[in-house]
Length: 238
Image 1: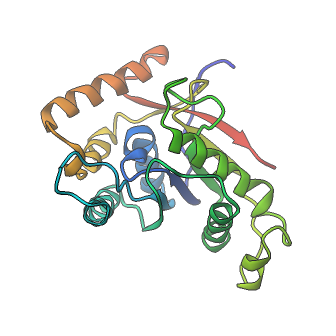
Image 2 (image 1 turned 30 degrees about the horizontal axis):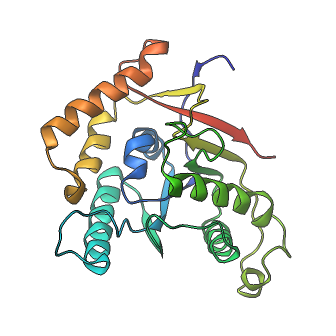
């Protein structure tokens, strides 16, 4: 596919489904910030709370979860995300179960997004060494989008709850090694970075992190002469 620059989704309903609290900051926060500026409503569904993400010998999964959920809410506020929900699946051990798919369908039907952002499960970036949770969550999210959220009888317990079927029109896959769609995030990069820095427990050196993230955004945009970019594979579902 020929690489091309596109505008991010505009004034629509967007849901981002990610494995961990700081995933969207890395891969799509600049694009989501531009969509929010254009009038979009963005909600975030985090499958885990990153509760194994600590090297502190005194930390427990419960204390890490509490800390990281608080950081995720601060980051979401800095981006303008309207709502954050945590499924609290075990960090590092997510499985694409019927229970997880049912939970994803529930929130898709509840929030009724036009556009959904999630991990690329088939061609992840980096290849071979992509985090297992990323691959599993991306696959479960796509399974939930098609056909489960769309088909009325697919998840009986969700139908019983009164949540009507919903068809997502477009899926933007981030962390994709086959990405060919680029969004210029020069105007929102600082907000993306501020959101990432809200995850203080995952930041040993803010200055070094900022320098690395500037290089990464510039490297991503370089093929299309963009100063800072994010890249995606876009799927049209209907």
